[in-house]
Structures are given as structure tokens and as C-alpha cells.
Image 1 (cartoon, rainbow, N blue to C red):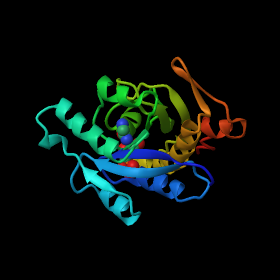
Image 2 (cartoon, rainbow, N blue to C red):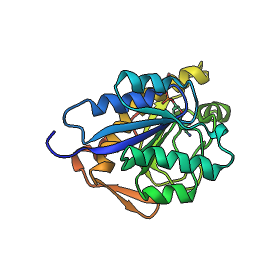
Image 3 (cartoon, rainbow, N blue to C red):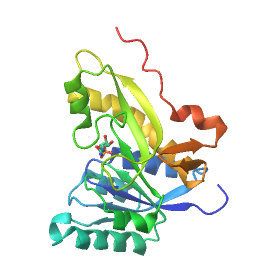
Image 4 (cartoon, rainbow, N blue to C red):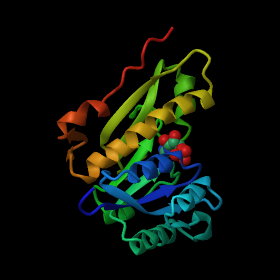
Length: 221
Ligand code: GAR
């Protein structure tokens, strides 16, 4: 791709399969962004190995090593600033960010969550879905605000919940859609093809608008 690529900072806490989806997307010549750094709040997170394998700088900013949330976020900001990060992608990052932190990247922080928000925000979204007996589950990519998984929604994808599902099987089915949806939403957001409109977003890329909508979960027997 000709032209400058937007510099992403990806925040992780665990396995990093969504980080991998973003790294794979960024490896494509026509993708408008690159991963400038990966920051994990968990030492030993597998996501750090994925970053290393892709030749991307990775650092640990351990929340437990900081006396307060203010100090933790200051260290986080410093790591992102040092890498020249312009947009922040949360990819399985399990800490809530303050309004102060978000104010440093206004309208430029994205998250992927394993439910069809606004249902089942917070921890263990897939378990919540199974406990409520929903027949359709899925994932959401949204702009981040200071609430828990409450920001304006960019795109969603649905999957069926099957009678024998447990948390593991449902999570795996949802992850497939996360890996498809997140890079697509990042591409549209960083290129200004998603416009914020209050609590809603408008996708101006006509060709791809459909891909950000609910996908048919297919026939469930
Ligand atoms: C993903 O399912 C992601 O949606 C979820 O954590 C998992 C991380 O997997 N995030 C949240 O629940 C945030 N509220 P990964 O580390 O393999 O990308």
C-alpha cells in the first residue's frame, strides 16, 4: 500500500488470538495500519510471544507493580507514546481504562467483546450467554468509552448457540468471528470510514457496510 500506515498500540492480557488476527491483517500490503507496539498488563501472556514472532516490540506494564491506577495508566501511556502510537486496540485486555486515559486518544480506542452488546458486558460474556439460554451469541467491535463495554458499536457478528455447547466450544465459535470482524472494523475506523453519530456509528464504506452487520447464524437443528 502506498502512503503512511496508522500506528496501532495493541493492549493484551492473555492468549492474544485477536492480536494475531491484527498482526496478520497488518502483514497485508494493502492494510492501512501497522502494529507499532504490544503492551501486556500480564507478565508471561502468550500474546507477548506472538508479538515477538512478528518482530513487533512488546512490553509488560504490570498493573500489580504500580501503586495506583493513575500510576499504571501513566506507565501505559508512556509505553504507547514512546512507540508513536496513534490508535489503541484492546485485544482481550482485562483492565478498565479511565476517562483521563481515554482522553489522550479521543475517539481512537477500539475493543472487541465476545457478546452481542449491550447484552452480557463485563467478564465471562460467553458464560453469561449460556446461563441465560440465548440461542444466538456473537461478538461486537466498538469504540471504547469509560463504561464497561458501552461505547458506540461499529460491527457485530452472530453465531448459533448449540444445545451441547459449553463455555469452551461457544468461545471458540465466537472467536472465529472476532478474528474476521476486528481487522475489518480497524481498517474502516482508521481510514475514517466509520463516523460517530452520538451513541451510533455510520459506516460510509458502502461496499463493506454489510460485513459489519449481523451475520446469519444459519439453521439450528
Ligand atoms: C476474546 O474473546 C475477547 O473478545 C475477550 O477476551 C478474549 C481474548 O482472547 N475480551 C473481553 O472479554 C473484553 N471484555 P485473545 O487473547 O485470544 O484475543
